Each structure stands twice: as structure tokens, then as C-alpha cells.
Length: 89
Image (cartoon, rainbow, N blue to C red; front, side, top):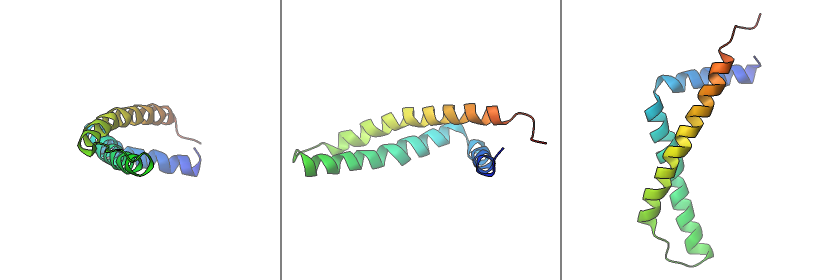
């Protein structure tokens, strides 16, 4: 396992100890959903001069973030389990 892969493995091992639900909520809904909602709202106001609805965006984007967080968790777990093979000699 390359050094960067080993560090990624160790980082994910720490992350997964905190739990799937926490990861999905913190990284997905809060870490992706809210910033994306605010960015979308700002871009809509500036570029199209429309009255974009921030409260609705603050609901819908975090819900999408839950799905995004679940997908990232799932893909990271698949990678992690593949890397758990026998250690390099």
C-alpha cells in the first residue's frame, strides 16, 4: 500500500469509528447540503436576478446531502474493505 493510500486508510479508520449516521449528517447534510444551498441561492440572486427561496433550499439541499453522504460512506467502505487484505510483506 502506497504511503498516501495508507494515510487515507488510517484516516477512514478514524472516521468510521465515529459512525455512519454521524458521517452522513455532518459531511452530507451539514458539510455539503447547507453550503451548496447558500451558494445556489447567491448564484441565483446574482446571475438571474430572481427571488430564489433560501428556506426551501436549506431544506432540499441538505436532504440531497444525506444521499450524497450515504453514497460517499458506501464507496469509502467498499474501498476500505478491499484494502483490509493481507498486509504487504
